[in-house]
Length: 228
Image (cartoon, rainbow, N blue to C red):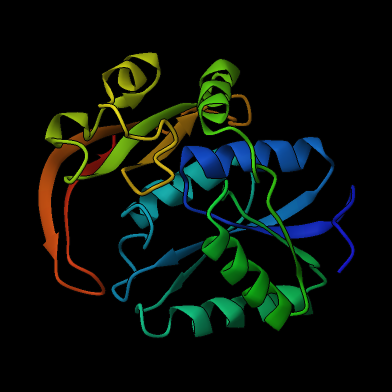
């Protein structure tokens, strides 16, 4: 498919994290018309699949960005089917492109191009193959503010969870932990920045320890964010 150009009508596959926001910032700067933020939620519809953000805070974030939010719920088993169904709905509305915030993980890009193709859409990755540390620094330099909402206990302890993402956070990262968390070391929620009409008021209510056996075993710390 032809690459997206200015005034392309697009949706954004939205996590609410710093990479999503930076990719959105670049897409908008290029003239892409992002008409919807698509956030995937768990079966309960209460927490986002990627970063465990509540519906209320994700809606407040989208309102602050001035872009409509579309939330769909899915299990891991039917995630792809639900995602493609929504992309086909976007295509029926005249959208022609999906925007994604991935940096350099090829399996992620392969999946994104596959689901977009299934709906007759093209995929745009504004951060693709950029230097990870440079991207992390750009997030900070542009003035975006983000909260660390989840960390993988294999790399980071609970003290990192709930911290603000910035120079102090980056300076504390152990050797081998990526500054963007691109390997799944941590996830973020952006609450303010140059694209925001107003900050998303919130506080960290608690930090929870989580252990999962499926779809793969995991040990995490998750910050429970609530409106302030």
